[in-house]
Length: 154
Length: 247
Image 1 (cartoon, rainbow over the protein chains, first blue to last red):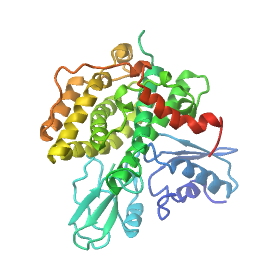
Image 2: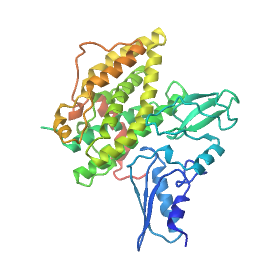
Image 3: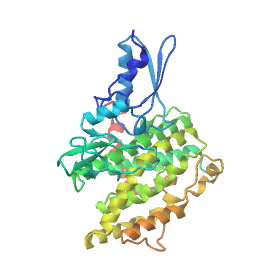
């Protein structure tokens, strides 16, 4: 039987299937009691439509290893892109999504230069702060002329 | 009668829900594709905030009502949103001025509410503040672009301000929440700070706030315009026609 914490951490994000919820920093705790596994996750955005899907995926993944699971979401402390692991950031970049810079300043800054994940140039331009999912912004690279998505630092 | 915490939570939940629905009406009608995506994203964030607030309202009320019950089964006179957010979309300038006036206040509200003695509201505030910063930035940039744009965009944006200004007092003042503020559950937002921020943006946008505009209030106590009834009729139609339906 696999370790429940490993099983939970390996669940894929439904909207970014190349990263796991463990790598995104969404797993707060996994506790095993006699009859069930209690999982505490933190949602990324309050309105992220993937939240319910993730809950179901975690329950299913644990069921596949014969665990009964109860999944709860805890909002405090608020999730930040700073919680994404180094491996998660590398995977985002490999998938053509510019990884977020540090959100530590506490202020949301969109003007910091974003490096093009395709050619590496910093000559990029924000097209829209809102992309195909709540967590991404749309950019265009002035060097290689390609559009790309960037994970918003939040 | 002073407002209780449930009333405050419903006011905020309804504010987010009603504005969410209004923005949703733009989808596939926005002036450009990126704007369709942006308005949908902002709408979705507001929906997320509304869902959390409705869930909390259900817990405070203790009668077993769930988020969908609050959204889909209440009549207009049971909604407590400020009148500003129910104002019809109008042209793009009206939508953006409405959004800007709202976002400027929401930003101060969520920043302040991080310090609430209520753990649920404080936790939500920490997340909602980060989302609202993106919304505010978006609506601010549009107000500046439109106000300081062409003669026509300036005229329409100034006209939107004149039309919406009578709803700003209600957004920034809730006189009956003093007890909640004294208890530390609601952290007050300074209307002066809100106004100073608005004036700064308007100056950059070459726009002006009307002086001595008559103010209209009532939404936060359940007195609404016919436009809200119309909007809710459409929003609630499916859920009311097929109670308990799952889709």
